[in-house]
Length: 414
Image 1 (tube, helix red, strand yellow):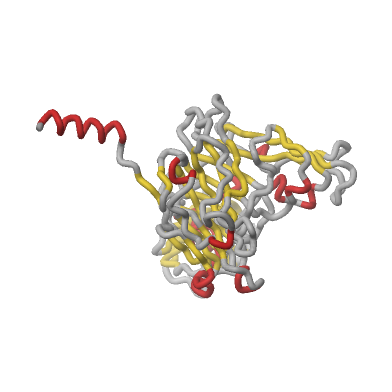
Image 2 (image 1 turned 90 degrees about the vertical axis):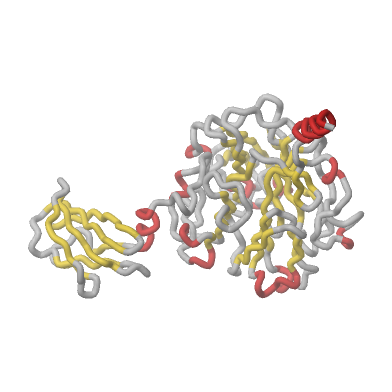
């Protein structure tokens, strides 16, 4: 009996405990870090893909980022429409664990946009600001019209890894999988879209050949506006536009976590928080159009209804973390959060400084000179105004204290 038990435990240890997500075997250790599937401007150069793995490890040669069509009126709904091959047998994740995919574009003389230079070359806006520690797959696209922003405007792509700078953006599911062959199959609907119901099938290559490492979906609400057949999502977490209003037409796979993306604007940026690996709204940042939506200098919207989680409302740091980890709500410093809410004017000042505090209540304001010596402290400001008329000309630090934390602001007295 002891011999049989020992054999059984050895067998379990060798095989492991296979986990599944709705009929697909799951793995760990490789994640979607950033996806910009619907950025402002020309998709062919402004889209951005970032995958997180183990630093300096070889990217699995059978690793794919795939997109699955979820548009209700598409004859391909429930089908893998794009399969981007990320590994080549020798390519590695960067020294910081990041793998980035960007596209440049060379347009011929027939395009609708004026040529940027004599050879019509348009460079990815991210290229010069991606972390030096990341591995970059840089794809050279050629075509007849960058402004067309369509796959039909791409003639060649080098290297050809299955990506032409134009991801499906709404409605779509993005999955990071390994597969022994190019996984362009239907995961929902036995033969065509007419049988699709939003639930991942229990049979097919995806049930026997795939390992799912990460996935996320975004579903829009075109079903109401355009009389579509519904929207279909297959990710482990699904951001559903105005799900509270349109849930009857949002068809989602059985085990998915559904987040109500309560805005009429489509999601532009999909990001994981820090090193998180889960499938709750606390693991992701999903944003619609921001207050500055010009890539690469994106600023997340200051409207809390458009940013998940709300701690990132007004966050400007996105432009500093291409090819690197995103922050998490927990690690985002109090100073960064408060910075978006507070402003001081005029600056320079001579008589009175006005402090705009957003939704935060000021408990006290301390004033320091440049060497750190406290000059004064006010606990009851009238109309959030600080009298500075008695100060000598120079530079000072205003420390604003709130229940949420403290913020330092530099002012000049003239």
